[in-house]
Image 1 (cartoon, rainbow, N blue to C red):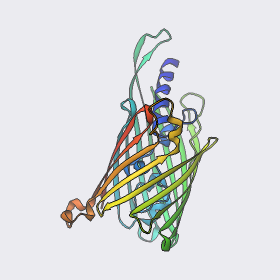
Image 2: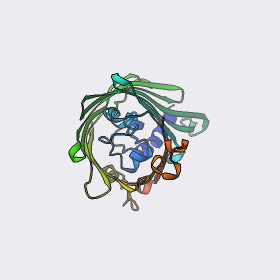
Image 3: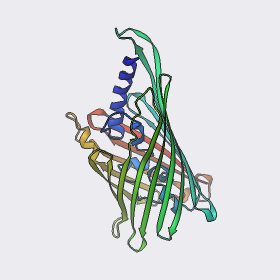
Image 4: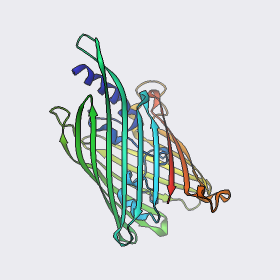
Length: 317
């Protein structure tokens, strides 16, 4: 039993360090992973971005800015062929605010189980699942508040671990300056059951950031600082250039990349790049079914560990 747990956590450690910036011991590390191609291309600096359904994951308060129903799905083929996906939906509840739901899963595949002598005795699998529900409302015209309730379920070789967690976020807008400030506390809660005896800590973290549309440049700039409990401070800088009304170029840098420079060839660790296409603003798709769609792609470097490719499809109902 000990051998198969160690084998799994070694692989999980590699994946968690590269995908989200693992800094502590394994414990729901998949909650550190960035989801969605657009946010990932901006390095994860999405705390104060509004008008996007990915806020279900990044800041529930931003859902109060949505004027239409939105649906998104993203897929990530991670290191070692770990499979990951994210699905989110949000809609306005007329006079009662905004509601959103989301699901994030990771499948780590099958692993070889060995005994103390190293003899193969079978196979085992592992996976994680996050299901969340969000509620957001406008405290005032420029002040948004939001909360999220999360259920977390992990499986490993027939054992399970569960947790209940929550997020709290706010956004304050300065519309005359095209400036938004966001703050949030994420993954605070409790582990309700452990794999065996020891309960791992949730990756609770605090985030503060701002986003601004520059006056003389077609750029949306987003800057964010964050800190996981009992870990060091990190920052993210992301940008989205409007190339045309339907084509966007995105860049980002996450300082967690410094922790991934474990050997030569890691000079680009933490750097991300991506593109987005919004068919609603393309003349050739006007008044067609396809104008409801958007497509995004992101490439994130983890230095010598490898690169991550994400794709997302969005749909406005």
